[in-house]
Length: 203
Image 1: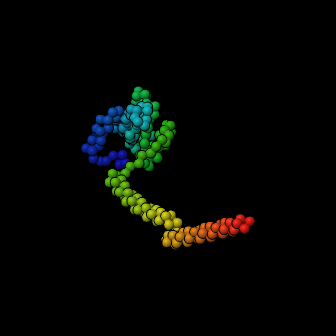
Image 2: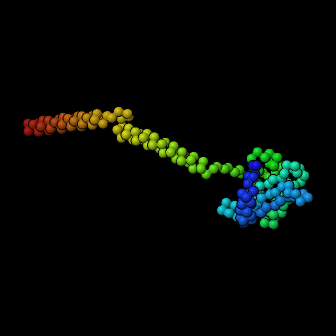
Image 3: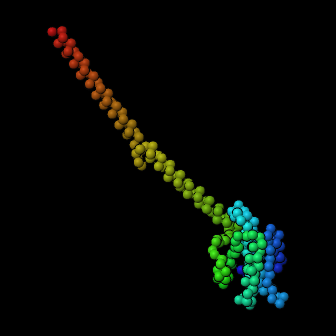
């Protein structure tokens, strides 16, 4: 049940799709004319991500009552011959989730972990993406509000309080004090000049 559904027409359509793909093949193991196992296999030509020919075992199954009788070995022997004929550098297989026996069987034959598949229904993916998009828009709104408040504080140089009017009056007061100092300093210079002129006339 992990591998396929009980609808024979649907299974036939799926197998027809596999064999219609380039390199798609089906191999069936039989004992005394009775099918006891099968393998769905594809020869993959180089792609954007893989620059060598590879063989991919889509599914490998042996009827439970015929396991440990060499059926799996026979099917994988066929996979090896297909790979060698195609010049494939590697043979990939993805065991069904929870099929520990198959995983141990493949590990004994040298299969090592390479990657794992993940699956999600299209409707669930779209719903999750929409929810995350709404969450991100809300987060961006909060971030924009915080950024605006920070800019306002930076522009006033006054923290949370607006002290711009105080700063303006302080600057005006400092300017007035500077004018007063300049006036007093200029008066002292004028007084020194007058006393110097009188001394010169007296001399």
